[in-house]
Length: 345
Image (cartoon, helix red, strand yellow):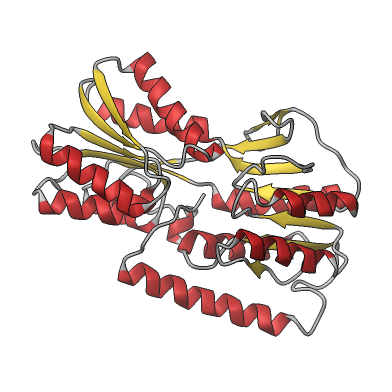
């Protein structure tokens, strides 16, 4: 999940630089059928190359394809445009891949492209997001309900079970947005009934998250903020600074901050002692297992519900699609410099 946000200047420059590097790599690869040589040919339809997470995911997927001996076609970049992603997939399907990996821009808009692949008997694996319908071999995504519960546990313990928490929700029309909020609020009700949760919708938009934070903190006592995405940090941080509420963990005026995604901004605030924790997306596992499932599906293998050999469980979602819900690490000051975290790469 990568919300619609505005990035800090440093983050934007970094993202654009990496995007340019990826663009050069893709252009350099177009003279040959694939980017990794021999093996099963697989297509990759990316959602955008304008934020660090998506750039890192694309690079990690290319790395995994090489490692697993898969011939990955040059990744496409939909630039956050659902219609362009559908067109990208149609173009990629014309190149004869044996499977497709898709990181959907929009869960509903992607369905016709998936159905086209279905009609051509080309298996599809989606990453990070479940499509609304269509047949997929596997959905590789984080367990967003568990991420919400993990964030709740970090928040509840930090507050000692008392206080008021602002819940900056994601887009409740998206699976990830709903599940993160549900995991967090259900856990709060069950495990920390002494904490009052004030939920505000953001639709994954930075401005809405910032305005909700400004409004509530200016008029009420708020002890903690749960961010359904750490991509809200620049706006939340500015509000806290303006109100003189950005205080170190453990100090009397500290507002407990817990988020999801594990962005570079989150890790930086944790290192500096201002953010308590984040739940990081398992980006490396997204890349590893999406390539693995696509490669296996290309050879005719099918999958079933049950535990996996990598600490997760495959289950059917409400649309009847199989999803491998991967575990996500809790990041605190103790492990913030872990090199396996995607934002440290």
